[in-house]
Image 1 (tube, rainbow, N blue to C red):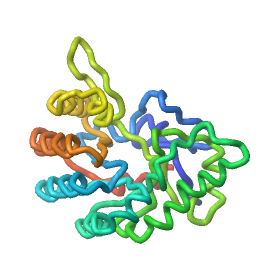
Image 2 (image 1 turned 90 degrees about the vertical axis):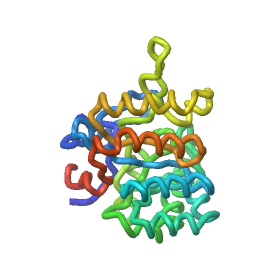
Image 3 (image 1 turned 135 degrees about the vertical axis):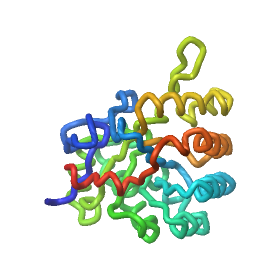
Length: 254
């Protein structure tokens, strides 16, 4: 069966997939289940690599003997090859998170194919040499914006049709405060709103425990995120099993 890009946002369980040609992902669409209720955590990191942050995250993962997935921007991969090599050499998975982090929404009819070509396929050309640790090519859309026409276009390409994505997440996508306490958290939004690290961390921990694990989204851009990861693993490191995207066998579930 041809490998196609899948919409992880539609997962109702790890055994339930839908071809993403039938659904549009919107930024405000509620996050659906990817790998919850398995007591397993899959760590994913977006937007890097970033000097001083990605290094620290790699140190923490090495300390705990955990492998993660780094969804990198091609322009950052070009600028920081030493960090890219370290990610690969330490056994982590590298995924495609676009060329310039342009969100794929409100694209002009006359030019949308050129934009998708650059942000997915041209990015692949840069990132591909670092994708040696993964069973498949993985893609995550910036801001989770996606449209069925993008899938159709990419599935007609010899490289695009071998991707799995857009990979979504279970934990870390939304900042939600209830009764003055952080119930859910998204690191980028925490730092934008000046939420302290400990409070943002409490949201990640609460959501992880509530969901009994899942795919965790963290951005390796801000030092606060690296600090939060250290504390997150110190608290939950012995309570969950840590897996990678490859362990989920996403393609086999289509």
